Image (cartoon, rainbow, N blue to C red; front, top):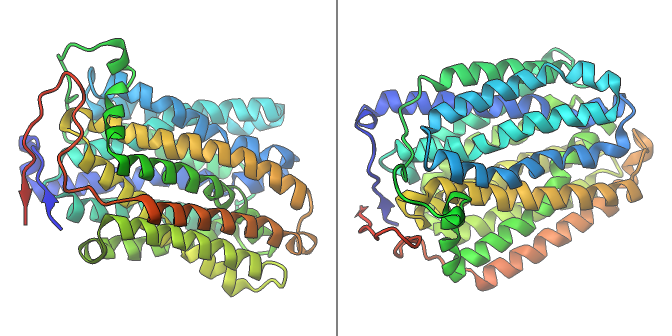
Length: 429
């Protein structure tokens, strides 16, 4: 398929240096998240906050709902993206150092500190994508190679935590805080990425990110957005409770869950080849099919403690994430004009990490409390199938809807917001 050529800053012509900086950025970005997110459920179980796990995993989605408006107002119009990234990371990292004390004060204080960190961190998911895409010349080939370092960061964080045997302690939060501050300081060395819409007269609606709604003029983007939202509902179960399942099997949580990220590395490197063979639609569909298979493996393997099935289900996270989310990032960037790419990435964060995972965290949390509840260890294993089979069935329904109604329109003219003149889209290859 054709690849898009982007206008990039002069600094981006030094491709090896730029790619190295972007790779380090992605490594630190996901090291921060991977250091605490997977083990939060086990920490909360040890701290007698089990019933609030679902609520805790709603905090990042709540922050993600707000982040598109932040990006539309700040990153696209007023300040350089790398400077906004630096400030958010330093403040969010500082918040993580408050977690041990907050947990001793009670659930409310603990959740409050996590929310502060999430409010700072979630906008950076879109910001790092924006910085990466703005400084690349061929996104389909270069972005997977850069994004794979994010996966490596998550893996390294998980392995460090399991190696130190601190899965159930507050240490992962402190590790995340230190890494976030380091990321913030490093961000000042990233290539300058000025706001693409700087100086343009904007209405209130445009400042709040309404420009990105131009994407919904495409029926296929509507289908993609709906499928992205729906598939993230069962995804919340994986993030919230796969670690609990591993813990109930008596295995180290962070190290075992890192297998999923290790698989990500493999499939990320293979993405350019798959893109050429499958195209956007079937990349996305294969990603969703992997979701179905993963939950089915969890459901079948849990009651008999068949660990290889659980491992295989975790390893499928590579295809689940790479083929759906990374392809989705690229597809969204292809469909948006230069002026609204930051908003477009923020919109995707809103739909997936915000609304999808937020509603999913609540629904799966309630369902988990009814099906598995406070049971742990061997007593919990026989209760897991009902929980995971429902997740598998839900993901299968989303896959069928997507395949039936989505048409790959990634080669068609980009979505232009009102008030911007359309620019010709250049292709190569």
